[in-house]
Amino acid sequence: MNLLQAIILGIIQGLTEFIPISSSGHLIIAEKLMGLETTMTPEQITAFVAVMQLGTLAAVIIYFFSDILSITLGWIQGNLMWLQGHRGNRGYTARKASRLGWVIIVGTIPIGVVGLLAKKIIEGNLTKSLFVIGTSMVVWALILWLAEQVGNRRREMEHAGLREAVIVGTAQVFALIPGSSRSGTTIAGALFAGMTREAAARFSFLLSIPAIAASGILELREAIHILNGNTHMLNLLVATLISAVVGYGSIAFLINYLRRHSTYVFIAYRLIAGLILLALAAKGF
Image (cartoon, rainbow, N blue to C red):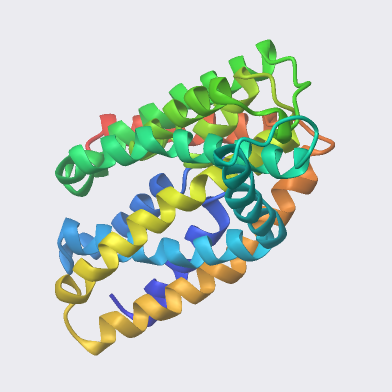
């Protein structure tokens, strides 16, 4: 991998991680077009991409820093109050933040368990198949369309509870399949749970933090050994920094967009891209 290829991957990661069109799908296609499979093993590519996600993790932390801080402090204060037996209206704000913190924790459990159990499959060649990516793009486009149709879009993020944690957390598991999209699956799950589009996006981004952090940190240790040489590490650093900058812009764009628009434009894009990939896969590309 050269520096230009690393820059391209960083831009794609930043653009597609939070927009519901699948970052993994686009990255795998870019890797194939650039011929990275001839110079790197599947494990090296997976490690590179996983660590590069730390850039988009930084973007989401910076963008939602005040929310993260209030949820963290509220979680600590709210649980201390519960342990001390405080009830009533006292500490209502802390308890509300504490509940949201628990929702994020519970919602992260499914992808954490499945991700660890299926780690070898995720890193292997099966998930690099254009047929798998194309099918996931189409299937989750239809699921997102269905979520738009049946969701009542009345609930805000602070109303999220155990029900939302289970629904959205389960949906996030499917993000392990390339082409599904972490934001696409979780936004669809949140819409099914009755959240507004903006709340669905915000909840999706907050829920992604533990999963991206765990994946990136876990792979970082392995990447140091897998990605031999200073050139690989320099490319990884550049790609990560670029993904952070571009990712921040993508978050701001999507939240502002969903305040006034539906996800139909992303659904249409997924359908078209997915069908093209399935056609290419059928021709043996």
